[in-house]
Amino acid sequence: ASVPVAVVGAGPAGLMLAHRLGRAGVDTIVIDTRTRREIETTQRAGILEADAARDLVETGVSDRILREGHEHEGTELRFGGRAYRIHFKALVGESVWLYPQTDVFIDLADARERDGGAVHFGVRDTEVLDVTTAAPRVRYTASDGSRHEIRARYVVGADGSRSMCRSLVPEDRRVRYGKDYPFAWFGIMAEAPMSAPELVYAHSEHGFALISRRTERVQRMYFQCSPDESVDAWPDDRVWETLQARVAGDDGFRLKEGAILEKSVLRFRSFVQEPMRWGSMALAGDAAHTVPPTGARGLNLALHDVKVLADVLVRALGVEGEAALDDYQPRALRRVWRAQNFSHWMTQLLHTAPGGSAFDLRRQLGELDNVVGTRAGRAYLAEQYTGWPVSARA
Ligand code: DHB
Image 1 (tube, rainbow, N blue to C red):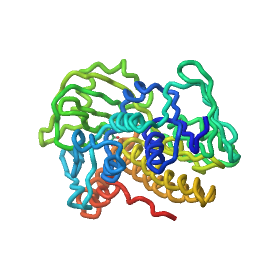
Image 2: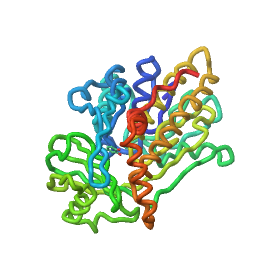
Image 3: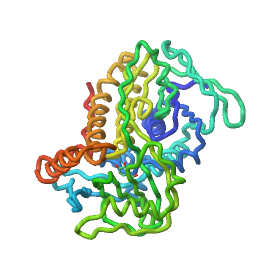
Image 4: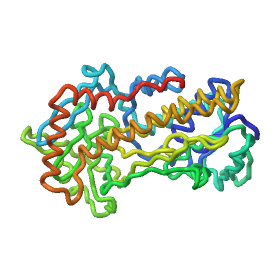
């Protein structure tokens, strides 16, 4: 097959890019090694910036988010056994939407089907060839065993945090920036009533915890654990005891408990590869950068990448030609590093480092006090959490 843009990776980045290009009259073929079912059932974050939520509706992906999502005008920070509300709407006039990434994916996959976009799940043996020429190719084996080749003008690597596309940028022409953390998240899905009206980000001397939700009856919660933790060592009682201790305080706050449906350990790191474009190939989303989950920036950042990339690709396929691609990295990367900073900041603000001293803990409480106790501190958190404006055309 021959198509202007071939997309490797059918997560939210790849599918939203294909959707945006489709609206501009540009055909795509999207492939992914995972099955649709695998992607749908892999739990990811749940917070969308207001702009990202608006884009899903206004570009015609779906308006389900307006019916099934929940607008949150603020969030709660807990530390020193007390709760502090950060009122995004009052501070910076913005809000966020609680709407799971798995639902964003379902809406996008359905929209591709509805609009007749080509998406092939469950492929094998993907090869991306000739990306430094004007005629790159993508080869793959389809789920029925047949072998295919896509001839494209441009290839987009939206193939996630374990991207193979990013390794096509030669080692001596790329730089990888990264940071590891000495902790991970233990995530659970629980069939229980809501414990709080908004998300709760909790700092405690025992470590971080986050109380989120999926539906009225299914709650999503996380607590900081060791990166080599195994779920087998965590019977339900121990999970609840740990979570309760992390959110406990003089105000008597307690989580409403219930049956635990799912447990997993999420390891994470901060990572950026530059350049985000190599010849006829561009990288988008986690393939180019990953962030720690605190603050839920990953999906939002990926959606910003493809908003810029769709614009740039449409121009590159028109009279401007390949030179239009030069705009991609400068417009995308600025937000990448802002999000890297915010995700790192929010992580260090709320997690306790193993082996940390009494000084470290008290300094951290001082920083939290500065955040909630000053208008500038609250506004900073609100502004960063709700997102940044789309980078103007360079
Ligand atoms: C969720 C995950 C996050 O990392 C976050 O900051 C907020 C919410 C979630 O899974 O709901």
